[in-house]
Amino acid sequence: MIRLENFSFTYSGSTTPVLRNVDFEVGEGEFVLVVGLSGSGKSTLCRAMNGLIPHFYGGTISGRATVDGKDIRNTPPAKLAGTVGMVFQDPENQLIMTNVENELAFGMENLNLPRNEMKERIIHYADYFDLRRFFSRFIPELSGGEKQKVALASIIAMRPRYIVLDEPTSQLDEETSVLFLDHLWKLNQEQGVAIVLVEHRLERCIRFAKRIVYMKDGRIEADGPPATVRTRLTADGLMAEMRENKPTSEWADPVIVAKGLTFSYGNGHVLDGLDLEIRRGEILAIIGANGCGKSTLLKHLNGLLRPQSGEVEFEGRNIADATTASLANRIGYLGQNPNNYLFEDTLDKELDFTLRNLKIDPAEWDERKKWAMKVLNIERFVQTFPRELSCGERERAALASILVGRPRILVLDEPTRGLDHGNKVKLASIIHELRREGMTTVLVTHDYRFVAEHATRVQYLRDGRLEDMPMENVMSKVRELCMEA
Image (cartoon, rainbow, N blue to C red):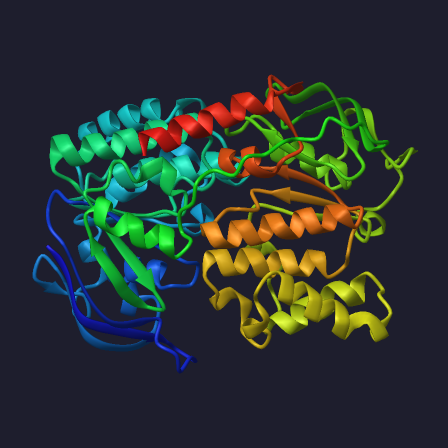
């Protein structure tokens, strides 16, 4: 059993506890869904279950935490790794080796498993997650979703007694997400593995949980069967009925046009003669399976990547000779990993960095910074070290560093990753408000509900090319998930 008794924790350098007098138990064979707003303490709770707190994340502890009777303060995480498997929000923080096959073997090697058994498990889980074709691939070259699958497979291959997962489907396409959650359910039901799952996309997973733990401000506000806790989640805005969306059929002038884009990383084309028109003022969603080239496409729109053939035009001009820096104040790009945007000591300095590099008149700085932080509800973090924020808070901080430049086109790669329902609604309201001011938004996401509720047009990327996706098809998929929930 994992047990926390009157457990509180405050990170080093902070005076505010992240966990406050938490009493929490997970018995063998349970399936527990942990929910709450971004920053409510969910990730910290996960870290306390496998000894990362206090051994890797220093701070002040009170109370007691044990795993099968072992006190986490006196037990190094390496001693708990075979008992409690942990899958993090950011797969980049979890991957150690340089290629996929070695990564799958790494955890099992540390458990001293026999070589033949390791090989069998590697093949089994590689086939399950469709990873065998990536065995020799350099891990940094994989897409975010592919990295997430590698991280998931490497932990499950160790076959721990408890598996703790922090937003494990945030970068997975819908099909892979459903398969993965079904696999967790089978592990739980057939092998008695206890599952502790932190998720924001509740419609995907609430049907699996036998128990829901609702966290708020570092405390457990509710703990019980889904039928009991679900009412509380709805009342507090963590769940809501799907919003009806009526996409516009109006045609506007194209602001970005891609013609015949072709690009490859070596073996086969990722983009293969792709054509795209982005119309002024629209909210265009681009969806598709993990690794199909969505992020690669976005990086062509602002010059981060250059096509091997074909061209991209911005407002009628080919961007081939334009520098990425010269495009940055007109095309704001937010990639999948918010950590890539956060390197200053405070959020305030992060925003200053953007404004300085875009050569914005200093007389406008204060007003722009206040506006960006207000619309993203992060004013209270103005003097906070950004990397100490939760995943969802870091996502908003990184977005603020883009919005403060007030670009004409906003290009977002997985913008809802790590965001609770309330903050997704807030993000959507920002995008719609910016649209009313004439801004165009292009987003890549696996969050079909966000697409169904807020996009004005959807395109599906497959085999290197785009095709129109009727909105009704997206809505039908979301309704199917919600009905199952």
